[in-house]
Image 1: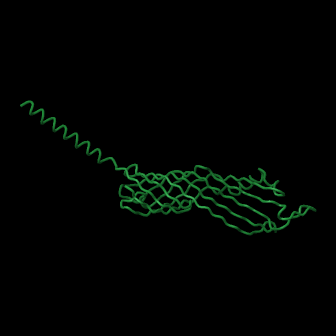
Image 2: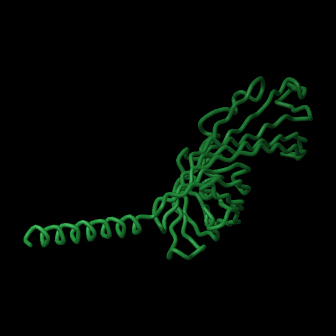
Image 3: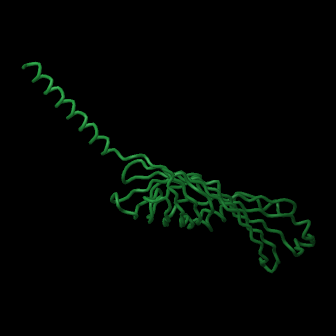
Length: 227
């Protein structure tokens, strides 16, 4: 009788333990993985998306775009050819934080690593007089202005659409801003323009761009759930 009672108690304990383990397993979110194709202010690219918890997703992304624009303008009566080169190159590390498990609205928080390059190349099309000396355009040389922000740029914003959708496909939209810090300029020049490449002129440029500290972050996403 005692053995029978002990066996009953043992199996009841085993059954309770198995049910507790099952309930604990159900409370832990299943890991999901997805990918996204992105297009926005940081360029075109993609991301790998990982579900860390029921309300938290983590995205590792990369985006780039190269833009080049040629302009003709005048400075102090001199005609100048300008070439503006903008090479966007960003790696992103972003957390999506959802208010509830059923919400598609989310807050985004993370950082961008910038390999961005913004360059202005200036070539005079007119001759210039310095006293009694006249410099032809090919004697004046080239002026190059490089502008760069911080490499690591904190980012925050809001978004709609899960990066790992409940179904196979989903769409998303993010809106926010990344803090670039103060832009730092470098001047490169040769020939007659070479003396202008100095710290004093670089300080003037830094002051002119001192109010540009934020990068708008607009991102459209096509999200694909892998599993």
